[in-house]
Structures are given as C-alpha cells and as structure tokens.
Length: 274
Image (cartoon, rainbow, N blue to C red; front, side):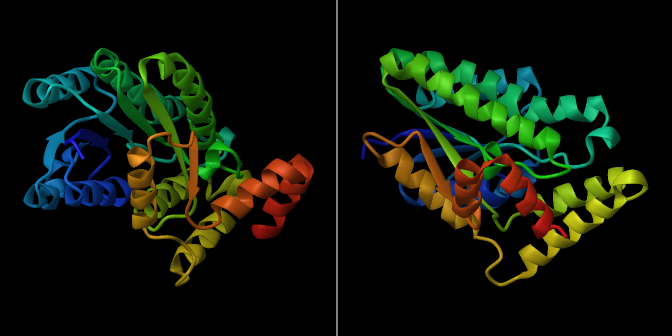
C-alpha cells in the first residue's frame, strides 16, 4: 500500500478514536482532530498526529488543512466523524440549539470537505467517508433535529458522490447502529433537561430508560471496532459501496422502515418505547 494521508474528525473518543488506532496500525499517516486534544494523547503515542480543532470554526478548519497540506501534500482520505445528538421534543428545543446541531453535523463537515477537495481533484483520487447513522434512514421520537441532520447528510453525500465521480473521488456513507460510545451519555442528559417535565415528560423518561437499559445489556450494542473495521474495509476497496450498514439493530430497523411503511414503523416505535 502506498502510504496515504488520512484525516479523522471527532477522534477524541468512540468511533473516531478506534478508527484512528486501526488505521495507524495499518500504516496510514493519520491526522486526528477534536476540541479535546488532551484526549488524543494516546493516539500521538501510537504514531498519530492529533490537532486541536473546532468543527464549527472556519479558521480552525483552514489552519488544519493548510498544516496537512504543508506536511504531507494534502488529505487523501477524509473521515467526517465529528458529531453529536440533540434530543428533546421539538417544542422544547430552542432554534439556537437546533442550528448548532446542524453547524456541527452538517455545515462544519461540508466546509471541511470543500477545503480538501481541490487536492483530491488535482490528484484525480480520494475518498470521503461520511459517518451518518441508521438515523439517516429511520426516525425516533424526540430525535427530530439529530435525525434531520443525518437525513440531510445522506442526501448531501449522494449529490457530492455524483459531482466528484469524474475526478475519481469516492464518497462513502457509513450507517452505524447502536454503538458503545459516549453518545448515550452525551444525549440523554440534555434530553431530560429539555423534556423531563411537562407535556413530553413520559416519553422523555421512557426513551432515557430504554437507551440506558439497551447499553447496559451485554449484547445491547456493538463496540466501536465494528465501525472502524467497516471504514477500513471501505477505504481499501477499489470500488467501494456507496453505503455500509454496521452495528447493533441497524440492519433490522432499516429493513422494517424500508419495506413495511410508515404506519407499521410508527407502531413499532410505540411498542418498543411502551
């Protein structure tokens, strides 16, 4: 393998960190980015190159891409992993919170992609891996803004794939299911702050308990390595799939959503959360 330069966002924990470890071990030059640079010290010890970056700050994105360009020419493989979930009833979630959800999960990702594309076009080669979610195809109560960003990312990625095909640039979507990461802790607390009282309190508390119980089960979620290995497989493929589905519950839930229709899926959500 000719040594490729990989850039992974959101690499301070979970899927991003595990993917960085996997690709460092496989011989890639791996740059990692996150706001919490101290959380990536272990990646530095392994041979990674951690950089402090806020995905919502344009000056950070420009500086990081320029540094990679100076040191290694540019980014051969971009893994857009940075993201988080804003959960709470639509009525209880401020529009400012909703906007920030889109800034992190879509607009920051899109801006970073714009910055790395010229190098890929010039080389007539490159891979852009966008970490979506099973939530890019299904839906859950109290997840409207998060689900909206992932639905948007799916469509955005499809359009980008067509635009970049003439330049031999692959756009790959990864759709994880339930993964053992900080994700559950990060979204459940703020969700309960928004909606644990008032009209949506019953459903908020039910979702929080369901999520906690699911992650507490020995086989309730998949380890981040499942997604890291999927990404590794995708970027090595000569002709990668446009989408890869991996992780607990992803395939069955997406199958039901696609083939059984809205009303049945609505009923299923109600049964699961009753």
